[in-house]
Image (cartoon, rainbow, N blue to C red; front, side):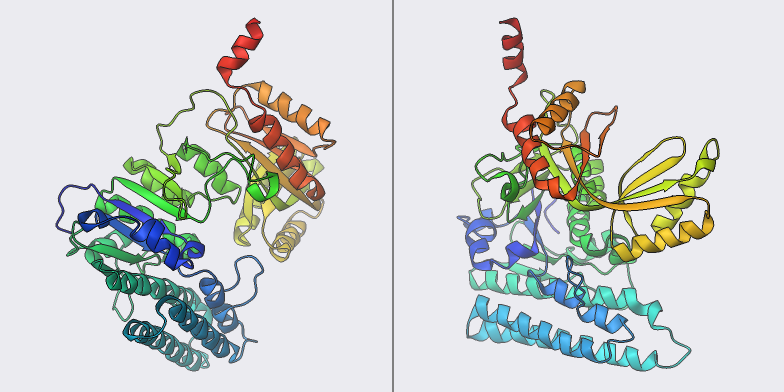
Length: 485
């Protein structure tokens, strides 16, 4: 890059938004920009919606994609058929974006070449691993990364091609390491790829996946594109990082509490972003946020299709003007994993062994509580994995009683949610709505209040807490005037 003064932004577009390419041209990619106003931006793009699910496995349902079928000894050649289906989906996307013409043929050729190289590689790997000296399991992470990279390369290539058609000097920046030897650290990979880009005159379109020595999928799995965003922002000295989503970061899910009552969060800090990540409502992956926070780079969350709105600004130094709950969110299907052992009192080591089992089976810990002889973890994961944890611990601690039940967890989050008044208000609001919490977690550090309820009460709890703690909240100054009166 030749621009010595960093006035640029690094911006990420998610997969759902990427699938609305024609609209993105008008709202994000070009908008009303002309000349140099088009540049001094770097875009990191995700695969089109549904493509990564088809290449790996469906993120929510778990339906196997190419990777899952290939990894399964029972998959046979089903992975090859699945790869053909992915190819058809990619070509259909090309048709939607380009129609007929030279650009369409260029885009189709790019897809066909990548898909056939993947197919050839997997056939060769299957053949090699049919010999006892080679174990497929040792190569599966590489297979997963290779397959995932195809989706990001497809969307980045198409976007740069489309912008070129629109008269924008866009450049496809392929971080996937396709046909490259060796691996470099992520920061070096990014800097090398952007080394000769003039940000004042070119618009880099960067793949969300980057092949590097850190093996992003091994650590972040499908959160890698946000890591690519954050490290690109850090190593290029960006003024701001921006994530374009198909919705605003709001005070609650408008589909649950109502679009007419939710409020867009104008500003918050990285502490709140961390709490949201823990609840599965990721503004940004927590490790990606860490890089931005440490570098002092603000993050903005914007609705890709409401370009006039400033969105939500996230910075480390944004303290709350007054104590308040900013967001009500939650997880509907949570498992309460209760470990009780009468012999636990005064004995160390139980907690560590439980954590080892949970980590071994890759179960996500949301929260936990404990007393003299009981440790309860609130978990998110497959029942199969949690049952394996239960089996391991039952074998190690035969006298322990382990109980497992499904619950929902709803959290009120804010930079400063005040003193005990928020807890009292929450209890009163729930009581008025006829909701009886199974448990409440209110920590000394007032950034979140967690309420455990029956799954059937999840949406009612969200709605009640949003109304009582956000909609009906009076500003502090107004509360003081009322108190005086």
